[in-house]
Length: 419
Image (cartoon, rainbow, N blue to C red; front, side, top):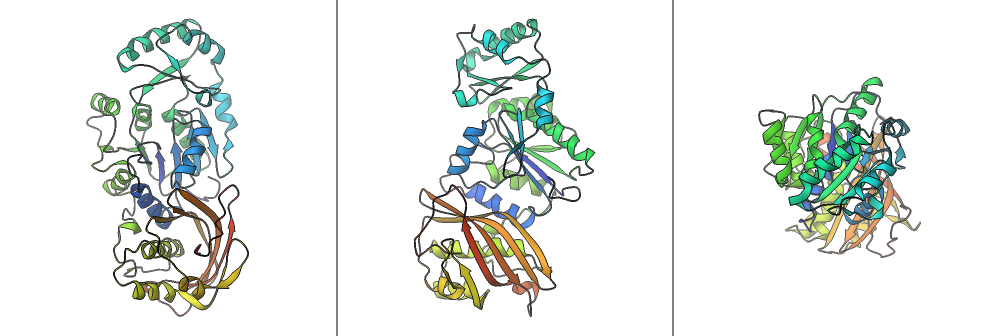
């Protein structure tokens, strides 16, 4: 959050499973659409927050499986853990706050008396969260009785039921909504309260997000019955909360437009990317557009491949240089000439940050990811682009591209790895 000098234009706080991530979308198109929109139009002056029921272990596993962006803040384990940045630095103040009137040993002792509760995996048992499975028909009675037992033991806690099977016992001050309220206060104290916040969810443990004052909310089209019921009982007439007509991340994009929070047309939804109507140079948009050009060519989704390839080459300087992650150096033109089609190919960029280094030159740093089938590779990329002799509608010229492998990712040594 420290990278922004002033209030974020927009803060999106989104659940992951079945909200940002559509597990029924094998092409991952909805999240890829969101990724392109966020990196082109919002990353530079807005905050992205993922708020998930997953533990850190399962969260990191999901990141390896799906084309997810890197958030500024990660809220995990149903709002009991808050971390910041790429290194996921824990918020120690939040830990101290949750320790009040909480004893995990007492929770373990009391829940063991309920045969209806089945303990979830060890990865999901956290310092401030005990997680179980319980049959839907038995959930309400178990919650009522368990709450009475824990209250008698002096614990200040809450029980959250979601997904038609998941039961979590948390400190009373925890939960996705309380974590969001804590973030808002922290940002306000720093003079950086977001101008707008959009909360996004699909299940019962997301309901708290929509109770925070001055927050816009979207229940995605595929929201579960428990969240829709909560809405009907508690927020039916609240114009700041909508039930989207689109699934998952597509519903988030829909909500951005519904509430007029900013641009809501993803570059992935633009048929002719060369027909830009920009009134100023926008390096982040140019990076997103360039890789979408490239993906469409590789997937054979263009009618006139030679003309399309010529357009791709036209944005590169004849003397432009590309340094492959392996260290091999070659011209940008040679890279384009070696292109091969691969219909399963997908590409996305993450954390696109441009820096203006002189009147007509920018350095743009970002992570570039590509997926071919089930295989995913990533690299840190630095691009130098120039606007010299150009109009905004003509885009920018790519002068230099340098890449290095992201630690822990598969290193692609094939000749068709590109930019």
